[in-house]
Image (cartoon, rainbow, N blue to C red; front, side):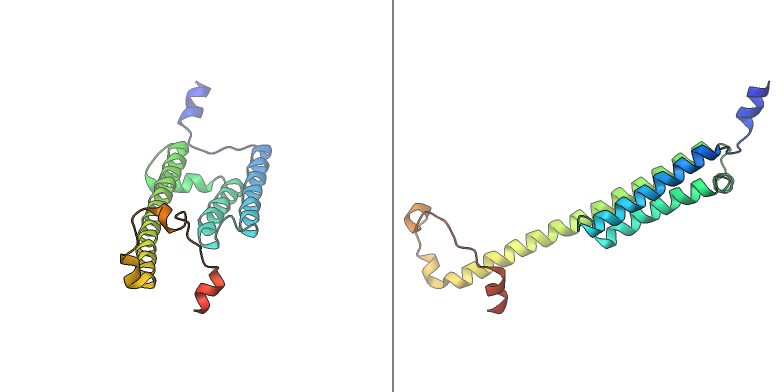
Length: 154
């Protein structure tokens, strides 16, 4: 009987050890984000999302009753369902965000490659049209890449 009543009770009960462990995990997660930024492996604009996730974990560890409020606002009885739904929505949002970023970067790469091809065609001038199609005839087919500084100055 007691187990049945406990299953119907949506109250979140975390032991002090579990709350401390969750807080430590959240702090370590946020420290990892800062370290990735410091090493230039993660840009600041993307780190905001992950840092906010770490703050959410820290708030959830500090105030476990907050999940009950969120669950009642969502209209669900079980706090686990509310937590799962929130995490699922967060992951779907991240996937959509990164898909938009990848699409934008693919367009930029295509545009830059086309611009560079046009620059090479203009540099070659009319003599470039008379070149042979055999890359071995033009010195092994290797092209010298200009250093970035020379290209920007000219």
